[in-house]
Image 1 (tube, one colour):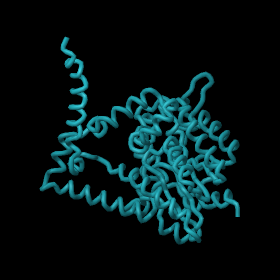
Image 2 (cartoon, one colour):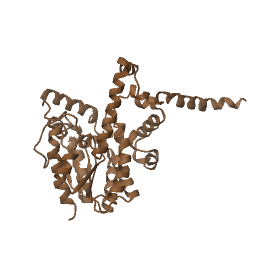
Image 3 (spheres, helix red, strand yellow):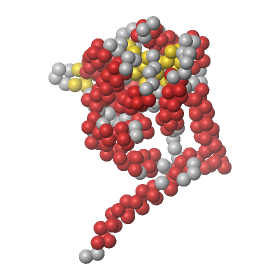
Image 4 (tube, helix red, strand yellow):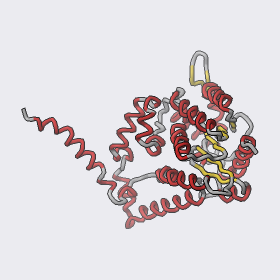
Length: 357
């Protein structure tokens, strides 16, 4: 028997693996990547080093660490420095941020002996859905190293693990390059590529200057188009809440983070950031569980309140509890830049209450 035939599957696998990487030699990926969110994840690793040094510097300011998602990325560092000169904010928010990523960051803080004065952890029912129509896998793929995923494999679903393996191994499956995008980027002597690279450079600069925040480049008040906001809320609901089933894994990561942080004497505030009224109403009134009928709010909020009480971490409910007066939105999920000064004040008001004098 010719045993070399048994080597064929391995040869084909490694051939496919190396061919898959050809599009990523140099910076050719700039011709087909449609977002630069990977910069946020890369910067957060660098910012851990910055935070480590800062917290061990004599005479430092008090330190606030923010774990969050796109709803908590747009704080203005100039406003923060002016209004809260005794505090330094380190914003670890990333697009689609979920509590598995927050737990990974928490383990890094503990491993390095980093003790911020307070941690604000942004939580949202959207990030706790185990069955969204649109998978929330960006954090897992871009933010979680293999060692972390292996250690915590029992808290991820089989589909999560299979998806993670496939997208980590085969980058073309992960990024899905399209010929029409490449051709469009290469048009006009590759001017779109140069624009995209300039955008990456500017984003990187802003991330470094503002310690992880990326304020919107455009200011002012966006047009509050009610038809657009209603349709966006409907689309968001269909993509991320229909159907809705609690992810026990995400609750595990939330509790594990709280246990570590509070065990190390760090004040923690849980934050449910404000969303637009159409989406708020859907979470409060549309049924997602039958017999008895329950809504997203009725399913998710009590579980989060239990953790809040258990670990002494106040839950700031900006949707149905005490909130800010500013109610301007870019879409159904994201506050307008004009609201972020008041948003900053709101957070600091509650952080100061939680931190011992």
